[in-house]
Image (cartoon, rainbow, N blue to C red):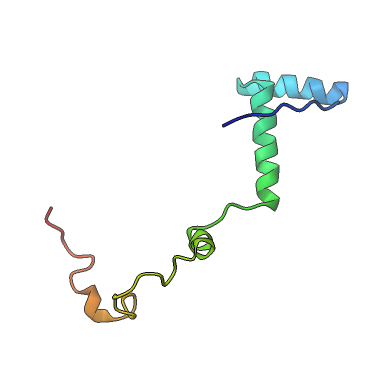
Length: 86
C-alpha cells in the first residue's frame, strides 16, 4: 500500500498533549494520529457488509439450477446442526 504524507499546523498545547498520550500508550505520535483519523472517518464512511458487496458485485441470484427455497424449506435442514463425523 502506498502512503501519502500530510502536514498540518497544531497548537503547542495539542502537540504537548499528543506527546504525553504517545508516551502513556507507548505508541508513536504517528500511530495515534492514524488511529484517530481512521476512527473518525469510520463514523461517517462505514465499512460495507458482505450483503452490500454481493449487491454491488451483482452475485445475488446469479447461481442457476439450485432450489429457490433452499434457505426456507425444512427438507434441506435434515441433519443440520447434528453431530458431524469428519
